[in-house]
Structures are given as structure tokens and as C-alpha cells.
Length: 487
Ligand SMILES: *Cc1c(COP(=O)(O)O)cnc(C)c1O
Image 1: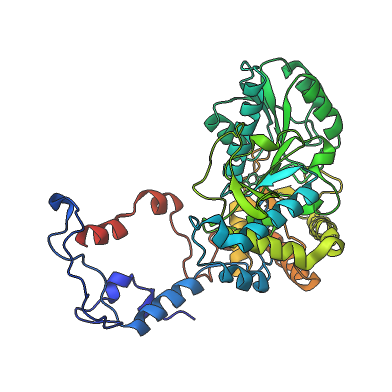
Image 2: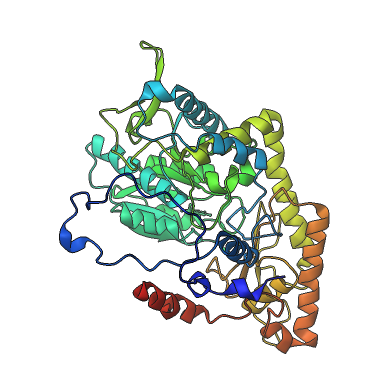
């Protein structure tokens, strides 16, 4: 129900002299605040001139063109697009005005909240201590790997410059390792999708800093050899890093610390009530086992027993700073609110329900979609396209056609282990009715792929924007650039 008038660019809606507000003349005259004369504008910027109602309609219409968790089912694998309770949002807003540079004495409540969240995450993950500083999952990985490097450095074991990563790993793992100055060694998976322990053994020597793993892995499969893998890596002098971006299926049931991991991160913007997607803000807290606490980044939020206050502190052994402040407060409040509203009792239901929902969809679709790995999955699973590929309908086509049925597409063409990968993660928060409606749409598309393949290949047909040229959209941005140049 979009009004095409407001579908234009905001610059096209501009009329000279139109205003939303009349601001009083500035009380202080502008003298450039000491900025070099050559950098000052000669004439005012050309900004769109619009009345307030036009602006409100423009942005509201634009937001209606978007798909989000609040508009429909969003089974994007590896992303945990679950419901984020609105009460957490309200609580988060309370802290919007806190300045990161406020003195500790002025923000005791906030620092106490940080301590409580550090304690709660440590208990959930089976770690000794957490830092809440990092802003994202990949940022957490980098922080964790720098802790790993610092650990070896402090022991005088500087020759450990390589890190082992399974071939099923999320792309951020090898990228973070490279940024941390570590060389990546890939270990391959077996037929069943888990790490090949025999292939791992010959890789372990005194150049290995550690190993990064996700469990359940990116295929949604639990690495049942994890204890053996951890003891092999430890025996070789390395540390185990857990990519806990997808902690959802383990919540309250299984703790990475008990599986033998030494360092880990969690994506609060997946599992703990911050909307994921759209580029942030997020948080990727990093946890460590006992003995590594002092290596955590600065500042560390601690309770100073002597002074009786919460403080942001720095240790001598710290790996350094990874942020300007102590973490994204709004995201952290949501996480603590989420944990406290579920409590010890109900947090245990999250993983089993997420797992049940994923298996329900998998079992009800596997006769029409290709299931490369049989068996019980955890929170997500991967199809390798349609079972009957004779009409040439691809995973991309199915993904686009799903939009016509009002569903967001699953993650597609990832992981790279299968050509037509389609990775589905329903999460625990969806009702049986929603799952059934999604299954119904997927089955109808499988039937359409045989009866009317052209229609599926040219989908979507019912969205505000149908088939943009993906490559051109990324590479040719003249429309906006021209307007910016004019401004
Ligand atoms: C999402 C994800 C990441 C990266 O998290 P960002 O916050 O996007 O940096 C890392 N590993 C896995 C397994 C993930 O699913």
C-alpha cells in the first residue's frame, strides 16, 4: 500500500522555501570555530527542503518497503532472527543518555548492571569472566584471538603463529585470525559434517596458537568429538576458541567451558534480545576460563571492595584496548533484561524449542528439498536446493519466490560445502501456525518449480522492488552520487 509520491528520493520531494520547523536565530554568531578558512563552505549545503508531513510519510513509506522480524517470519540461518521482547527495548531506552566518559562515581548503576551481566554470561557459558567491550561477533573473535596471542607471549612461547579453523567455519573466523596476525590452517570435515579428528592430528605442533570452532557447527551439527579435539589441542600447547555467535541451541543446557573451550565470544545481537541485521549496534562479549582473566581487554568493570564502588580498571597483563568505552550500553541492558525475565528455569527451554522447530521444518520438507546430511540437527539445518532440479529452478529462485508468500528467504549459498545451500533457522519464538504456513509455501514453490518454472525464475512478482540488478546496485550508485555532488 505504498504511495508512489513518497517513493521518490527525498531530494526530489524538495521545494525551495518549504520548512518543517522555524528555528530561532542563533544566539551566537558563527565564526568558523577556528576551522581553517579553506575548509569552510562558501555557500550553504543544498539540503532537501520539505515540510514535516512529507518527511514523515517519505520515511514511513520507505520503512514499509523493508522486511523485518516485526513484519514476518525471517528464517535466516546462522543469524538467529528471533523475537526481541519490546520490554527490553523500553528498558534499553532508559540508558540512552549515559555518556561513556562519565566518571565511575556518576554511573554506579550502569557499572553494577555490567557486573551482573558479566556474572550471568559467565554462568551461562561456564567461563570464569567476561568482558562486554567488543561491539560485534567478529570484533569479539579478534579480541579473543589477541588474548590467545597475549597468553603465548606472556609464556615466552612466541613461535605459535598459526590457528586451526574447520572448513565449515563462518567466514569471519579466518578473517579475524588474519587480522590478529595469525596464519590460518584449514582442517577438513568428514562426510557427516563434523571435524575430521584424524586430519587434525598431523596439524598439531608447537607452531599452533589454538583452534577456533563453532558448536553446533555452521551446518547445525553438534561436534560430538569436541572433548577429544580439545584435549588434543591442549596437549599440543594450544588454546580452544569457541565461536559462540550461535549460542541459542545450547542456552542453559550445555556450557562451552565444560566442553573444553578456553576463550569464546557471544553475539548478544543474535541470542540475547538485540535485533540482528541492519549494521548494528551490537555486542560481542568475550569470556575466558579461570587463569586468563587478567588478559581481558581494558577497561574491565570490577567491584572495588576497598572503596566499595564499581570501577573501570586496567590490569598489567591486559591485551590492550579494543574499544573507546566499556561496551554498547543499550545492547547490554537488553541482554540482562532478557536473561532476568527468562530466569534460570525458562532459559533452559530456548535451545530445545529452537531445535524442535528446526527439526520439524526439516522433516516436513525433506521429501521435496535435498537434505545432504540426515539425522537430528540443532537450531538450524542445510538443504542443497530442490530435490527435483530438472527444470533448472535454483536456490536463488526459491528464495525470491518466498518473498511473494510473505516470508524472508533463508540464508542461501552458505555454507560453501554445497552448491545450492539453503540454510534454515526458525528460532524458538515462532508459533506452530507460522512454521506450518512456511512449510506450506515451500511445498507450493517446489510444486510450482515443476508446473511453472518460468514464473518461479522471474519471482518475486508482488514486492515493491522486484528484481534489482544485484551487481549494478552495489557497483553503480550514480543516482545518489549525482545528488550528493549537486549538494
Ligand atoms: C554471525 C556470526 C559471526 C559474526 O558476527 P558479527 O556480529 O556479524 O560480526 C561469527 N560467527 C558465526 C558462526 C556467526 O553466525
